[in-house]
Image (cartoon, rainbow, N blue to C red; front, side, top):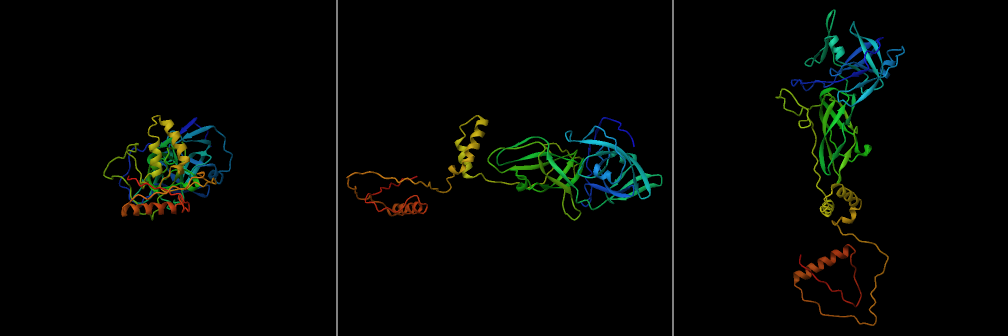
Length: 378
């Protein structure tokens, strides 16, 4: 067993170019099978990681000696995500009849049990053959060819927001997210169920591209208020694209390189358009005179809590137990001849009376007092 050689280990990925000629059926994540102490273990090849990693759960089934404790931190390529290293062990990886020694850093947990980083790739002169779906390494007997492990659909990686995002009402926003994977051409993103997560945002399943542990996706705020997305919010999970899934990459393959800046991002999403309700428009008009933005937002939240009051799309009725009476004393009812109206006016009056009767705004009266009605043109 080798002792720790440095206080800080940075696992960073710097992929400067994409292989644009990869076939659609080739996996974005590469896994191979290896044998350690007679037990088979699936390993993910991550050329962007400077070191190789294994979880405590996996090492407990392979390595039964005590692991000396250490206080070291590994940092992902996003510059923010860190996880603690609990030790370092030397393992002998068996491929066919060839053994390759490797110093592996032990961590508490990862999204996959075993990662072969660039240290293993460089030491063994590893070559990734995308056309034939295999990896080859150099040995004293020549090159050894290791086929891809095909059943990798079960790998699931969390997708979390990197910074605090403020999404305006009824608008979508492109969010930069982090994934515990240095790079991948195509992964399938599945958003967190909004019913289970209780988040007031909408996202669509999509195919994402991962570069330098980051990706970009679109988030929609369907509400009438600004929604704040906290840092490290779980947005969903990405899985490897199954072989039987027919899909395509959403970028111009004629370009030699691909820049994943915030101005040039890759995402496949469904745009959602939700027209603002009349009540929302009414509230917006009521607060337009307020120039102070924080005060306007506070008042908007208060009015939205009582949105039903401003809903004029349908007629409502207030239920009260007070009996309204007018004391006329000994005065006799006043009667007068009705004003002459045209047939169109009488029809319009009858329609309005019928509407108000149906909504319980008025009811038939047996009072000897008349109820004058005036029709005013709009």
